[in-house]
Image 1 (cartoon, rainbow, N blue to C red):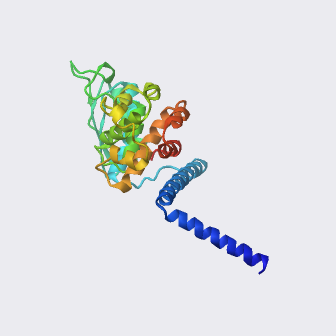
Image 2 (image 1 turned 30 degrees about the vertical axis):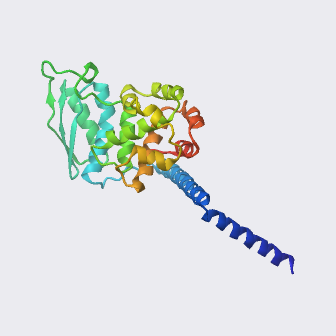
Length: 279
């Protein structure tokens, strides 16, 4: 028998053994884990490549978007400005490519800055301002304890990540809370304190696990178990995307803690934490 034929038979035998291994329960679990890791890495590299192309080409966001996307885009621009001006959150409503703004500001100058910022957003054609100039007596600014203070940049990022992953508008806070509180309950108490200590106060409150779950969830080792505990009401196909997006947003907020967190996580959660990117 020729050397080439022998090598071919040996290779075919090895392939058959490999297929047999993958058909076992452990093999199927390994296959799913490998597929998720490859998929996450592919999305991560694809996102980096798109971002690089976007910056090189000096492109602008697509102006032809629906009302919901346009309103979210405007809110993301106004959020930091509202925080700097220390004014209550402005209500944004999009109709076609026109915006309606409602809210309270302290001066005409503040109103002008908000309108100009909204008008600069790609896709906005016209801005109609119905903002009231002059805070009423008894009104408080966000920094003084307003009923609806402007969220921190960290909380905004986590909520945007949840929404970008498919969480319906209005449900982002609940989904982010569930994912982050479950995640922090998996961490050892010392590392949990370190991570939470690096988060802004409003996000720290969202991520802190209920006292009774801090030990109850420590047994969670596999991603499937974690996803079921964190997002039981969501379709299985959506759970990984939402979890990956929210954890990616938080990991970006604590880069100095990322390696320490990875070191104390079980295998599947560790891999997800390392490669997660916010959507």
